[in-house]
Length: 347
Image 1 (cartoon, one colour):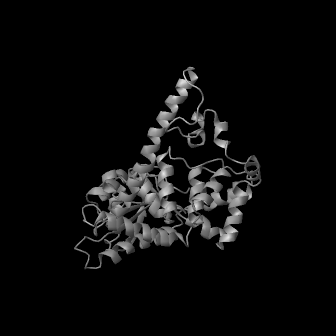
Image 2 (cartoon, one colour):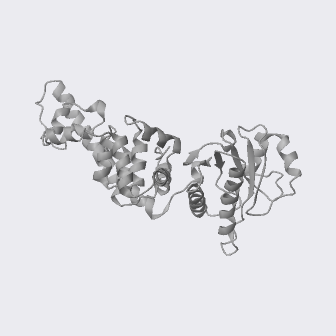
Image 3 (cartoon, helix red, strand yellow):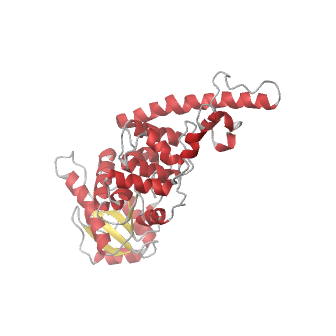
């Protein structure tokens, strides 16, 4: 673990194995195949000549030569012929056989391109879904970091009804809040110049708790309707202790939880062993998603790590959308975050 979508040039990835979307000869071609052969140098094609080609859906390994990797794993994806000729099974086999071979070679990290989605014509939405599902299933039983490397943003299209709903939700919540925030800040600037009293009934004003910390002016106003005793009571337990209690209550094992959260085992070990561990905000949210917490429970877990959700941040609004809709598939959430240029959840 984990599974990471990254925009990059796959030939520059520093991993144990780079997967090449090869043709059946393994002697180089266009697209990703040609780029990998050019970056690796002539030694790669010379080694490939001795492999006798490769069948569709299978995988074979060579050295990586000039690449920042130990191995190149060559797999042959299917040409899209309409979907009635076993293309899906072949494509799933490409990912599974490549991962299995990487595991046998002792690889801890693997970088994939989106196989068959270029010149071979496989519909990108379906190709992405197959890649995600196959990698996710493999990682349930293996500790490995897997990258899906997207070179061109245009080659990654979430599309469909879900993305439309997310964009609408963001427009309704983030954009409106941004306008209110500007109104509030203008009012505070006027107050600083002495032209008006500190009046929290100003139309469209928003409480300081909804602003980022650097903008929280007169922050004590955010607590005017809260019981200070409840606030102090909430300080008793930190993030690590609360998380471990939630995992026990969920009935999941530690491994099931950190894998559903797309979190590396080593990072989870740090959290478990250090009661004062301070995680990042995406890490906290990843665990909230894995534990299927509702918005109120997610907010509580975030507070114990020193964070909060705010409509002032697009990332937070997107997370709020998924949790409010009870969509707890972290891979689907990360696809949306990637498409909308936001930080991904997990390690």
